[in-house]
Length: 193
Image 1 (spheres, helix red, strand yellow):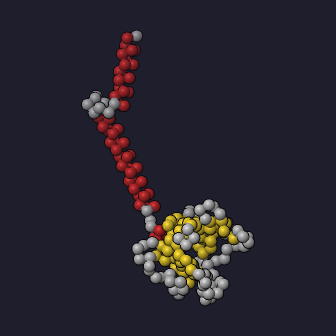
Image 2 (cartoon, helix red, strand yellow; image 1 turned 30 degrees about the vertical axis):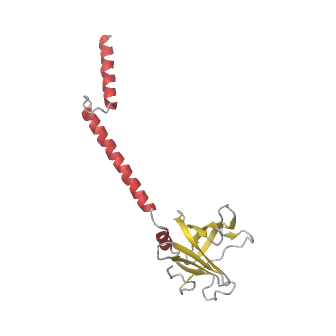
């Protein structure tokens, strides 16, 4: 009976030494090995997080350029801007690296700053644009179609009120038309601020 109790005490002491971080204990060598494994694991996790942060640290301008957004877009680039369908939407990179969204409706123009960009898994470009003239931030979702045109899939304000939802205008139910990239500098798309 005493031998059984002594055996249990020894087994318990060994188990406790594995948990003991005192490198002077008899299990110190095992503990150093365990600590080395934890240190390597910690470094691997930190390295992975660093890579993830570097990938996600792409700037708004880099994302917009890579996706193909930078430039002037219109329903028909041959129409003059002052016609009803001659509206030009331009996305430009200013000299300070900000992305600006310039809208030219012919009779009026405005400009907003693209404050965030994100490309979803299905390739949709999600933008948040702050318009000082409207005192609001709008969120857009754009898709690039196989022919190189883009379509707005959604457009909403900060309150979640949509003007475009599921690729259709909420007021009429009509689908959003494709916008073509204009080759000429129709709205100052290549001008820096």
